[in-house]
Length: 323
Image (cartoon, rainbow, N blue to C red; front, side, top):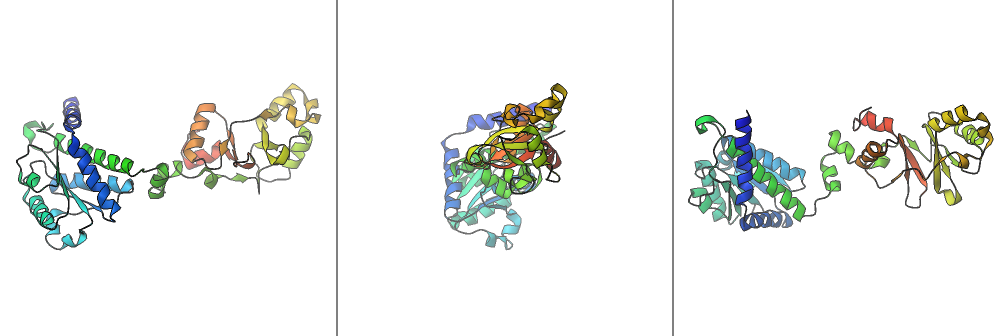
């Protein structure tokens, strides 16, 4: 197993060494196709086709419209999926797979750009059809006697991923773009706006109290709210947040000196607690909890006024942090 993994790792490293200006040309073709309203078509036979489907999926995840077209099906009607605005990535390690070469020849006649990924020795039929030809080198397969594609398919996939990421970077792909295309699952939750997951908001069930009142008065006002969070948000002039008073703070105060219940809450609150802007994402809240171990995180607007409070239990319920 180690031998197989080392062989595939070496194949990927070799691809990195072989990169030259043609890789930039390939990215140019991908970006140009998208800019003119086209799509990136990926094609390949057998194991190369399966790798091509994954490359196409990666492109789509990165906001680059893409679809996989089977080369044999293409000449039986699926050519209609390919338009003059598109570019095509054609995969064949040998560079001589009949179905892929035939499709590339048709596309060349139609002046559709073709990026090929082959062994890259420069003399294969597929490379002769290419607008841009990329090579992964003469790879030693991890499989004994090279009976099954292993290192070559891994290297092809890695090069396809690299092309996809470079094109996405060229197009200034952002986390917000990723979130739009991954609304479900763990990744989608991390990229949701933090305001989407607030159970406790200033307009409904979050106690927001003036910091000039006593601790007892603040607790009395907070008790009027059902299902409140484990903290009271304190504000000063113009409703700007000045501090936080948690259930833990209350327990410590009573154990230390119950008479402090009659003191101004400003004397015992946590001043200037760590907070998040209302523009933050869930991943920002996760990072803050992991770094500062703060169970309640106030969320404030651009003027410093409380919008809501995020409880660590909310993130546990989303399964983006563990208890």
